[in-house]
Structures are given as C-alpha cells and as structure tokens.
Amino acid sequence: MAEPPILDVKGLSVSFPGPQGVVRAVRNMGFALGREKLGIVGESGSGKSMTGRAILKLTPPSAVVEAERLRFRDIDLLAADERAMRNIRGDRIGMILQDPKYALNPVQTVGRQISEAFRIHRRAGGREARERTLAMLDAVRIRNPARVFDLYPHEVSGGMGQRIMIAMMLIPEPDLLIADEPTSALDVTVRLSVLRILDELVSARGLGLIFISHDLNLVATFCDRVLIMYAGRVVESLPAAELPRATHPYTRGLLESLPRPDRPRPVLPVLTRDPAWLDA
Amino acid sequence: MSDIAARGGVRTWLLAESVTSPAQARAQKFYLGWRRFASNPLALIGLGIVVVLILMAIFAPLLATHDPYAQSLDRRLLAPSAAHWLGTDELGRDIFSRIIYGSRITLMIVLLVALIAAPLGLLIGTVAGYVGGWTDVALMRTTDVFLSFPGLILALAFVAALGSGLENAIIAIALTAWPPIARLARAETLTVRRADYIAAVRLAGASPLRIIIRHVMPICIPSVIIRITLNMAGIILTAAGLGFLGLGAQPPSPEWGAMLSTGRQYMLGSWWLAAMPGLAILIVSLGFNLLGDALRDVLDPRG
Image 1 (tube, rainbow over the protein chains, first blue to last red):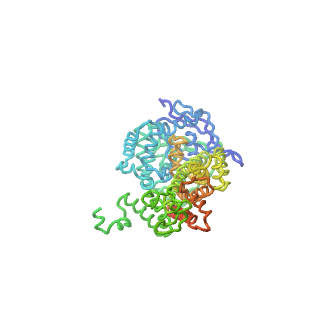
Image 2 (cartoon, chains in turn green, cyan):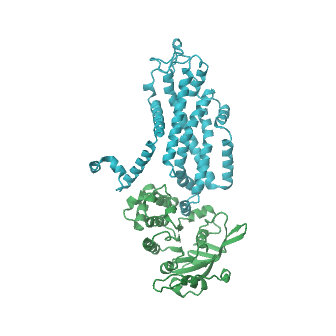
Image 3 (cartoon, helix red, strand yellow):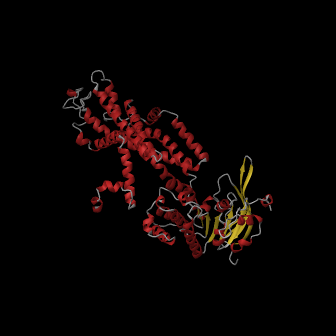
C-alpha cells in the first residue's frame, strides 16, 4: 500500500465482565484499511458489529475495550476523549445501521434528519443545509428529492429508507464508512440497487468502507478484501476474488453449507466446529 | 376541490379507500380521530365545557352584566333574580359577573402552571432517563420526595414560605405538578434511549444535550400533553383550595375558591354565595377530566 492506511487496528479486544466470567466478544483483532472495500463476515455473535462499534467507541457501558493500536488517519482513537470522538463520529467516520425502519427518528421528517447530520459538524444556515440535503438525496437516486424531504420515515419504503440513511451518513463527507449489515433488512430485489448506489458513492469519493455482513456471496462480489471472523477472532483474511480458494476449515465449512442452485444436493452439510479454532 | 365536490363532497374525500395525496391521508387520519372522539358523548361534553370556559374568559367584559368589583351595600345578599342572575354577595357584588371574570383567573392559573410544570418535568425526566447512573438516582429521588406529599399540602408549604398571593400560588402549584410529568417523561425516555435512531444520531456525532432536546423530547411530548390535561382538574382544585384557605388570590379578586370561602359564612341564609362558585369549580374540573380522558383514548395508539 503506497499511502498510509485510513484505519489501523491492532490487538483490539472487547470483553464483557459478567458474573459467569468474562465474555470476550472480540479477541485480538487486527487489520489495516486503505481506500478499499473491506468485508467482515461471520456468524451471529462473532464480534463483527462490536468491532465496528469499538472503532467509534460506542460500545455498551459495561464493555471493556483494549487495543495495542487503534489509529484513524493521524488520530489515536484510544486516547481520544468523548468530545473528540463526537467530532470524529459522523464527520470523519460514518456508520450505516441495519434496519432503516428503526434507524430513522419516526417523529422527524427525513429532510430534517439529513440536514441535522450535516449541521452537527458544519456551521451552515438552514437554506444551505437544505440545498446540500436535496443534492445528497439526488445523489442516492431519490427521484423528486423536494417531495421526499418533507416525508416522515413511515412514508418511505425500506430501500428508500436505507438510501436516506446512506445520505445521512455521507453528507458530512466522512473518510471512512462502516456499513453494519446495510442490506439485511431489505428485499432481495432492492438490495442490489442499494448496494450499487453505495458502491458508486464510495468509489467516487474515495472512501474506505468496512462492510459487515453474514452473506458470503454478497461480500465476495462487492468487496475487495474479506476478513472471516469466528468467536471474536479473525480466522482468515484474503482478497475477495480468492474466497473460493479459502484454506481455513471454518471458511470452507461456511462455503460448503451454502445452497447452490446449479449443484443441488440432497443434504446440505452442517458446519462442524473445531474447538481448536477458538485459539489457533 | 371542485372535482371532489362533484364526487360527493368532502366526506367522501375524507373516507375514500384509495388515497391520492399525503395531505389527504393526514386529513383522513385527523378526521377518523375526530370521529372516534366525537362518538364519545362525554368527550364532547368535556370539550364543550372547556370551550365555554375559554370563550367566557375571552369575552368576559361583554358577558358580564355588572362590574365584578362594584359594591352596593343596599343590594347585598340578594337571591338570584332577573337583575342578578346568580344573586349578589355580602358586599352587593353580582355573583354572575364575578364568576365570569373568575374564569380568567382560573384559566390563567391552569395555563401558567402547565407552562411551568410541563417543560420542567420534561427536562428533569428526559435528562434522568437518558443520562442514567447517579444523575438518574439524584433526580428521581428528588422527584420521589416531592411525590410523597399530597399536592395541596406541599403547595400550602410553598405558599407559606413564599407568601400568599396569586403569583406565588401559581409557582407553588407548578412546583407540585412537575413530579408526575418527570416520572412519565423518564419512563418514555427509557423506552427510546436504546432505539436505533438514537444510536444513529450518536453515530452522526450528536452531543447528549442535542439528542435529549431534538430527539428524545419530541417523542415524550404527546404523553406529557395528555398527562397535563388530566392534571388540569387537579390544578384547578388545588388553586381553589389555596384560594379557599386565603393563601391564593386575595380579595377583592373574584377567584372562585376565595368566593366559596367567604360564601361559607352566609351559607345558611344565602346558599347561592357558596353554591355558585362551587358549581363553577365542579363543572370546570369535570370538563377538564372528561377532555383529558377522551384525548388519552384517541391519541393512545394501543387503545
């Protein structure tokens, strides 16, 4: 990589001390991210989302976050206090949540929410914010932005909601976008169009993207590089194009257990877990 | 609108199954809510009483037949008649006119108390609920201290400390009216603070103050409005109670509680002195209670 990475993570751990011992949600996670699309794949509870939240330091209060290195550009996120983090969140690092139905405030119009995301970080008048919002809505391919501006979240469809969410997170022009299963709540038909918009905007603006998903095929086609997580650890990291040639037994198992329309099988294999993966 | 009228008027437009514009959908929702409200006769009675009270307060100079402060000792303690519809009091003042003017005082107390108590309770409740931890404990235990006294007793204590008078009575009642609202706002806040859209604005870098004011408070406002409407009857009764005890509005102001209090001394000979302001208090608090109940039924999505 010629230029220094946007995000540099080394030895990141997130653990939850509880009455029955410490639950370690993320263990010794490390990666460096440039202007690329990085996919993080894993089962539920493998620590994908917690990694994303730890980068923004928005883990639940009971979580203990430790890392050897957590650098975003030239900022040491480990040393940043809450005030510094607020300036980073949204402005430098944005995060798209899973379900637009819940991620948009039901009592505020769509336009107001997007312009608020802009005005938190920029000293902008109402008119400028409105114009930027309309331009942003147009950029996420919403026809008739002026009408959508005044709609409430319950009046827009799921795909439209997720595009609004993308608009809300991209309007302060961050350097890094974390998308936490951005298409899991959408219909298959809308999924691709939302992904295409996301892809175009990320490429055009030269952002780094962390794409958290449990959909192996989707990540393989959409991302440049894939991290496979199991029980809080990265078990394998490889370019997306080489995913079919993955070597780790867990990745192989995941790939095997995908149903394939071109090769029907009477019984779909079930993943057998090897306790050695936890530490290997 | 002309083609709407051609197809059967506004009613059809309001009940049409297929909606052609967001404005129509909103109008329909409002209309259906109104129908639900109007189908309850008690709700209409409550609304009617409150509307009459407001009109009475606005048009008091036009409605009053006499000057509410004009005394004439030769016409004292007259029974209700054509000249004095509700009779006269011990100083010969027309009770009907005094009740009309008293509606202004009652309405002012209710509005000012609501304007002080609702924002105060909303602020304390949402901050306690959103921030949590020790802030929550400190604010809520303070609230509990206020809640542990009966409203009138607490108001009495405040008035005793502040000195009697209408303004102090309003402050005292407001200080007793905010705790239930704070409780309610805190409960509402707890249900939304973990919501994804709050997480989303945190992800966008919003400060806690901004989140509380712009995202949490708007969610709590509907239930706070209903709660304060239901509390209005209590506010009126507390105000009348303070007036009755001589700690609220001072004579010669035509406050209903104070009128009731002086009327008490003449009750055996001239019943109307106490009965008329008493009836006014009864009817108005009934009206606010009925209205509050009905609003809750209409606006509660679970209902």
